[in-house]
Image (tube, rainbow, N blue to C red; front, side, top):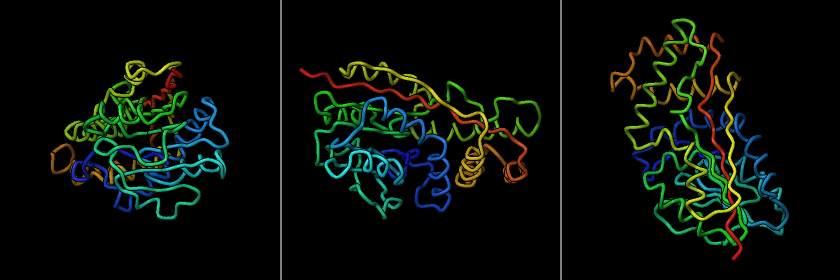
Amino acid sequence: MARDARSTRDEGYLLDNRQAEAGKRFTALSALFDPSTFRHFGTVGVGEGWRCWEVGAGGPTVPAWLAERVGPAGHVVATDIDTSWMRQAVGFEALRHDVAAEPPPAGGPFDLIHARLVLVHVADRAKALRSMTEALRPGGWLVLEDADPALQPLICPDEYGPRQELANRLRRGFRSLLKERGADLAYGRKLPRLLREAGLADVQADAYFPIASPACTVLEEATVRQVRDKLVAAKLATDEEIDRHLATIAAGGLDLATSPMISAWGRRPVV
């Protein structure tokens, strides 16, 4: 599963994975984005015997899928600063690891390295990207997926009434909190260029974001509950506004979207 918003230090992490809502967020993110991620794995040809590094895995769904695809002849290592949601790892190795501060894990060089919703929140993104690129075998693929909230900032793209306006205002507050913690809210669109600048070949990219989905509703409710105290403390929202928004979500009265997920992939040249 996608690792959610992370920084290189736990104290800078806005959405604490140790909170109960984190499990709901991981489940929602998996439902929203795993099919697209797995499609990209198919595009680069993940198969039997591949050695894979899942960076910032968060939960088990993506490394478990990779482990099944590469089979017993392959190897999958999933890393994260917080591995608590991968305690029941089956078929893959789970390691506590900071991609921007530590060398790549043992097991490389890798045929595939994947990170989803990771670099946009990492303080030293350039160092992390360099580490991943250098851990690829010649011919190996790097697949990066990151949101671009600045490209489509509205959680309710059809802002036709006061409930939608409130939802979008709370979303602006959430983005402000992310930005304060060093998130690059326009990072997703940069991925194709960054992969080319890293020396990768055959670079391609696409974007995906649902406009309305039950998983978007679950994700928004869990997110708001996790950050409500921070929104109120920063005077970005009141408790009454948050309660009103949560009641609207529970009543099913909103078509909720996500930020565009930009996926980019490139191959380390065979010299």
